[in-house]
Amino acid sequence: MTDESTSDEILMAAYQAGSEQAFRTLHDRHAGSVYGFLARRVGDPAIADDLYQEAFLRVHRARATWDPERPFRPWLFGIVHHLLADHLRGRGRSPERPDADAVERASSTGEAGPGRAAAPPDPEQAAARRESTEALDRALRAMPEEEATVLVLARVEGLPYEEIGPILGRSPAAAKQLAYRALKRLRAELAATGHGETS
Image 1 (spheres, rainbow, N blue to C red):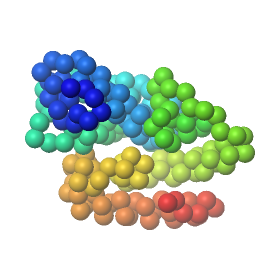
Image 2: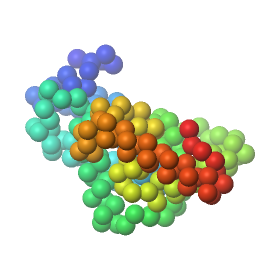
Image 3: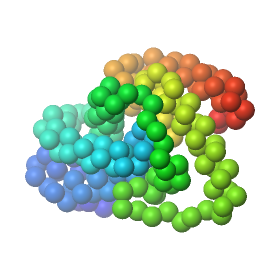
């Protein structure tokens, strides 16, 4: 029931029926992506950890509202997106970045995250990555909320526009157009600060 081949949708249906193991499997499967998304968007590992925990608490509370006819991952990131929007409205849009190394480790691969340690890179490589990550994160935090979110979901998390559209309340085509505009804005901002284009 809970091996790697079991779909998210089957697991979520099992969780709706009362299987705690199904929830643990879903959590383990998506924890890195959710935490990485939040860490990149808020710029503070401690806040990202709080939001990450709240996100899965909201999944638990909203489990009865999930529609088995729809994919699980857009529903999950819809919850995370709304949680992030609530946080940004309440706290302002430009948080300080107290620990760039921690955020880079958390958001780069999904292997680092709550309770996970990442192997330290060599100092020269770490400094170059930190500078690049800081420039990218500053540019993302300066962008309109939906533009930054669509970029992180599409370019970092790898979600298709068919999944991103419902998260943002847009059609897939509108989400793709938003991402195109956002990427142009991000590239211009990075070029203006001497960091070239992002891939």
